[in-house]
Image 1 (cartoon, one colour):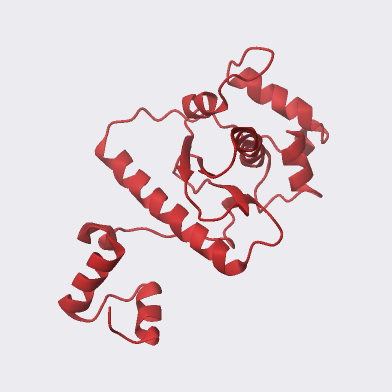
Image 2: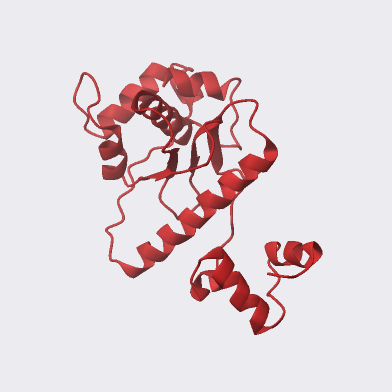
Length: 202
């Protein structure tokens, strides 16, 4: 947009662009409607207590930052949509800390199946069960195969699962179940000894 890097950094931190010309250029370059930039919206990031993700250890912080930016854009669009339509608020995503089940993670998974009315046997469509319970599942092009998915659950919002569309179906399914395990069992305020192993066991 023809301004200094320092000024761009100010804009990224939330300052309003100087003058209508800069703002018009930003709208054009970034491809969002003007109303998008006026949303009352607090982004979440990797340091947030409401975010979990499944990624490779080699994923760079820069790429992860870009992934979270994309997830926040998707989240902002979802919240706009939810404000415009009359959606019956149904959230049956329980919080079931594993220590309340004597760290028996399969018991936690069975309890989720019971609460969601899932039949015995293989799960035919995990996405359908998540959405019936009030969650949102979306596919994203993260531009890398180094991250499988991100789930966020800010207060007052539905649990959201943003999955990498570049992943093959079997890995997508595994990662989605893994993130549901995090959503059900974990918060940053009640850490367990090995949340990743627990999510895998779930």
